[in-house]
Amino acid sequence: MLATSQPLNERIDGLIAAMSRAQNGERTDDKRNPRVPPWLTRRFFRHIVSQLYHGERASHAVCTRLIREIEDPRAQRFLEKQVADEHRHAALYRDYLDDLGGVSAIDPGLARAQDAIAAWTGTWHGPMVAVITVLETEAVRTLQSASRLFACPRLAAINRGVVRDEARHLAFGRLFLREHVRTIDATERRAIYRWVQDRWRGCNANRRDIIGLYVMVRRPLFAKRWARQNRDLIRLGLIGTDEIARLDP
Image (cartoon, rainbow, N blue to C red):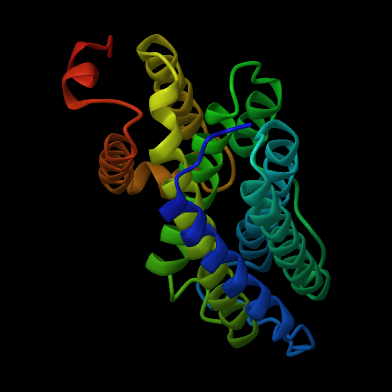
């Protein structure tokens, strides 16, 4: 059983209560027709939205695993709520994609990241860092920075709800990790950092799919995104600035 401080327990209880209220008031009956941005083909747009769906499914799988691996009743209750959120998000994206023409195949980079997380054999800290860094933070930043791409009223409404829910998921993950990451030794912390960095690069910066050209053109943006992730990981206590400087490039 993990030893979690009372202040953190109270924060988790507050997040669970907020999630319960949000889930009880959720509307899922929006059936407006999808609107494709005029500068994109329908196939291209469907591929992009499909990755949001696949990302929710990936997060669902990781959180289901974490429920089994984290021996903390409050964390388990939160993660059960999060699993329900991820399931609902995936269903909303799936309904939208059905009206758009169906779900496209998962991006190879995301598929590799999902497989690598499933194959992780270390402590639960690795998958939790991965779901925050590789899946959820990037999804939220994409939704917030690409409003013109996701301007379809029905999709925008879905995304607003997703961003709201993901803010609570990220708050929990960061609070919980910040308290418990200090229980693992420096060697494992550095190993998790390098493993997550590789997963992030494979999923976001080295794409070879239909959006590879977009990524190549916007390569400086992705360098800035990893710098932001680095700062987040330092604040979590996973890695120190001096440790990053000593790691092999």
